[in-house]
Length: 324
Image (cartoon, rainbow, N blue to C red):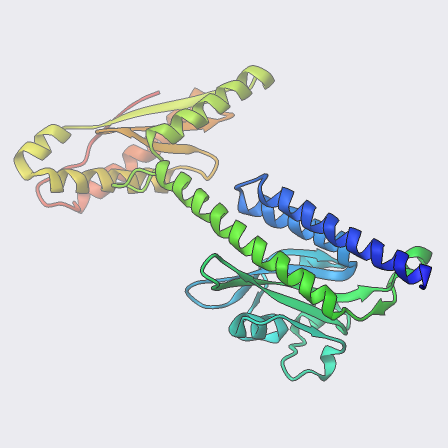
């Protein structure tokens, strides 16, 4: 019996057990998709030692692949970068739902040089596997590029480490990770969607009272901790009951939506706007005093006045009472 071979096999089995244990812990520790992806890819990088590695998600409408997580050399350049449907190795994997391991992609007809051109390096060895959801549908891919040779990692010589090829075993292990991650990601996205729906007013599309109360509590705690100020605007739609009585509730709903659109166009991204209930709306302005609230109030009234010059609903004039 070759003792060295036996020891190597034992280390390999232990390594596989460790990565699956770590991945399992990650996938059950968070329901926030971005956190799941980031942690999984960190573990993947530590285990497989690629020069660059990415998790790509497929857009449902276009079929394009977005680099959701990109790690490695100059990976920040891939932010907001897309592969077209079927483009490159990852595109082929997503179209066909099959994993691949390629020793030299420069000889592969499916290889696309666009990422190499962007990052300024040469891709050689690649392993790429599909992300599969619970219905076995492809939702993205994990792709590893240019496996770093162990000797190069140990020596630390030079800025570009020597590469070796990925193996069939690498592909098999990564394929399992792709399945687990795809299912966990789907659960996380569904949970996120449910939370979003629970926080949105179905009529106006604004945040609802529940969401506002959560954010208000956080802002008050921030004020206590850092001594900052906040400004709150409370608003009522004028005469909504009369509009409902005289023109019907559908017209009243149109008025609420019109007011909501004016408010949306008035606030900054950092402001917290919500429909508080009935004819009431609120805006919370972080790190602002009353003068900032007065400015916003004037802007809102100006937009409402402009809207009444060409009324959206004939015979109905918009009005809003604002308290600061």
